[in-house]
Image 1 (cartoon, protein in one colour):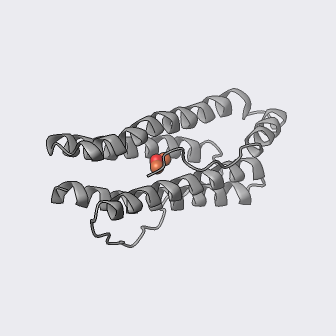
Image 2 (cartoon, protein in one colour):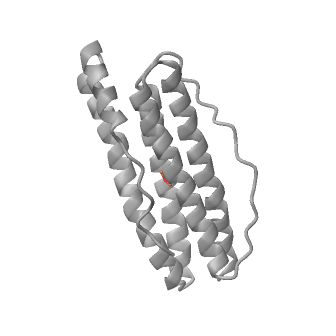
Length: 170
Ligand code: FEO
């Protein structure tokens, strides 16, 4: 594997674990607000991000590349009492991650590394879904979140999210 592509894939392990940490921090925020459904939704999101990190980890090992684990940054977002702010931060973060995936994809293509391109295809699709999920949450919050009954119903809906392992098997 080209050195640059391997380095970017290694870096992505850290970015995905940071995503997990960020979403756990958001779950933590909603927990302190008594919104257990929102908290549960983001706890599951954190698990998915951990899964993503492990997929990059496994892919590098499967291709005889070394993995170097780096320290994970502290989530710096402070949301005060704005219940919508974490949802907006989440969408912005997903757009950022999409950019990272696209950059690795471009580097792999440039290196004629079609195996990595094929591996990343799943993530390209996944990012589309994650951005849509984040946007849908913002829209629902705008529509229903300003009224206590609506917020209660939305919290109940989000509590129904269940964890499923990633469909990508490597
Ligand atoms: Fe692993 Fe939400 O991107």
